[in-house]
Image (cartoon, rainbow, N blue to C red; front, side, top):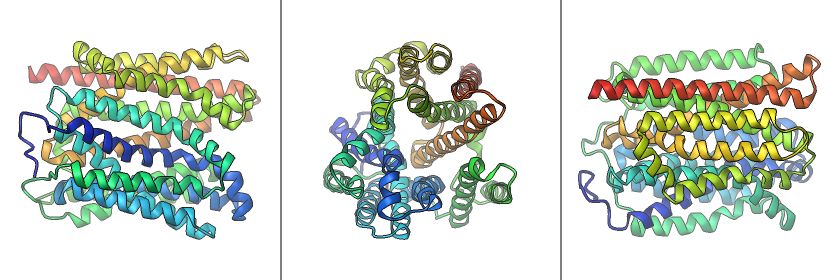
Length: 464
């Protein structure tokens, strides 16, 4: 087993990082790849609108609900074991999805892929924290974050390319060779690491967190389509509040909790959490609006719209893979890096909303600013969260980081989508409504930067 206290990084750490990033990329691509296949699924599987929604949401619901539990399991039973299990489940689920002959089979397969995805997302970041020295961690997390941006942007592009040449099932079957390659590489290269204390399983905590988070995400997903005051949305939200309240109560009393609530007393942790929720809220919702802006206002097709968003991901990839963002963050410090990154992102959203008068120029400028901001702020935020948690709890830290991203992204799509709907309903044009939504996202990101930077700066002073 790899010694987590070793001052030297693992001798094959960069190769291992490549392996776990490949596994992570596959999971993230599947968050968006299905969107471009909706017309094919509707025709070939005779899928109703509700079936399509469940095909998309089954994956994200299961994944977001299990992130904390998956992270805790990785700490307790071994991160390598959970990485192997995640790849096996994800590959098997992909095979079942690609060969599905009915909507029910595809929904079940997507849920199985969500279980594997939760295990992969938590263990990849936890392993990265274990194999690198503290000095190298910012660059490693930067590369990990760049792969996340690449996955987000690449899903529609890869899906569109595959659907132009093959049938819809191929978008899932392409995961299988990647998962198989990842399995071989993980078994051969990745060292095992886990919490040396071997805490007893917190089964009630795992059950409550899974039900509570799945209910919360489901309520957010249901709001735009069924109405925020509908019985379905309010009932599910009430279940989420009650169950998550019970989870917090249980974790504060159990001897060996899955999530130690004392983490929230660390202002580095709470500052990074506040920033992470607001940054994903603004970005998730604003990029959701951007795809509609490119297609419905500027008139691009789905594949061309996907290509037009690529500068954002490419900027993140270049700045993080080159190590430039890690170098800047090291010089500026975490609070200033997060503030600067989120100011750049906010300016990018304003540029998209205000400078795009029927052309692509304002959008391009906005995407470049957003990409630069993401490259600086996101790794600094993830590193702040992980650094505030003991190394033996790295899996739980990764689960928290992933849960915040899922929650903020879902909330951003729901709320900014509601801003768009209310703007159009009040008589504004679609273009004006999209601009209003982008501006709300810009304000949320800016507030997130100020709050997170302020709390992190205060925490640094207290430590000093």
